[in-house]
Amino acid sequence: MPNILAVYGSPRREGNTALLLNRAVEGARENGADVQEVWLPDLNMSPCLEIYGCKRNGRCVIQDDFQALYDRLLACDGLMLASPIFFYAVSAHTKILMDRCQSLWVKKYWIEKAAVGQGLPKRKGIFISVGATNGKRLFDGALLSMRYFFDPLDMELWKTLLYRGLDFEGDVLKHPDFLEEAYEAGKCLCEAISMRSSK
Ligand SMILES: Cc1cc2nc3c(=O)[nH]c(=O)nc-3n(C[C@H](O)[C@H](O)[C@H](O)COP(=O)(O)O)c2cc1C
Image (cartoon, rainbow, N blue to C red; front, side, top):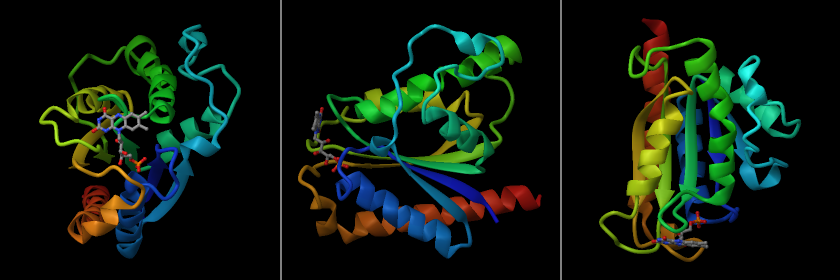
C-alpha cells in the first residue's frame, strides 16, 4: 500500500488549496493509499537558522515539530503539497518547511556527495497551488522553488495543479472541474507509485 504524505501549506483550513488537496487525498485513498495529513500552521516550526548543525549527519539540530515531519518526508513513497501564492511565492508556512529541508540538501550533496543532476528520483510528488489573479507568470516563482525543493527529497515533481482567479475562501467550490482534477491526480499518483513499486 503506497504511503503518501499530504502537506497543507495555507493558513486557511477551509481555503482553496486545502479543499483541492483534500480531494486529492480522497482520490489517493480511493485507490488504496495510506495517506497521512499534516497541517503546517498547526506545527511549531522555526525557520531555518542557517547554523548548519545538519552538516554532522544531515539532520536538522533545531528541536521542534520539524523532526517528526523530517522522518515522515523520508519515509513516504509520495508527497502532495499545497500552498497558496503569496506575493508570487509560496506561503510562509510552506517556505519554512522548504528551508528546513536544507538539511536534506546538505545530506545529499555534502555528506553523500551526490553528483548534481545525476540519478533518477525515486519518489513522486504533486504540487497544488492557487492565486487570486490571472497573471501569466503567477506560478513561476513557486514552481522554480518547488523544483529545487523536490530534488533533495529525491522526488520527481510529477504533477502540478495550478489554478488562477481563486481568491476568497471556498471560491474553488464554484469549479467542480478543478476539484475533480485534484481527485484524479491523487488517484493517479497512487497508481503511479504502486506501478513503480511492483516493477
Ligand atoms: C499575503 C497574501 C499575499 C498574496 N499574494 C498574491 C499574489 O501575489 N498573487 C495572487 O494572485 N494572489 C495573491 N494572494 C491571494 C491568494 O493567493 C488567494 O486568496 C488564494 O485563493 C489563497 O489560497 P488559500 O485559500 O488556499 O489560502 C495573496 C494573499 C495573501 C493573504
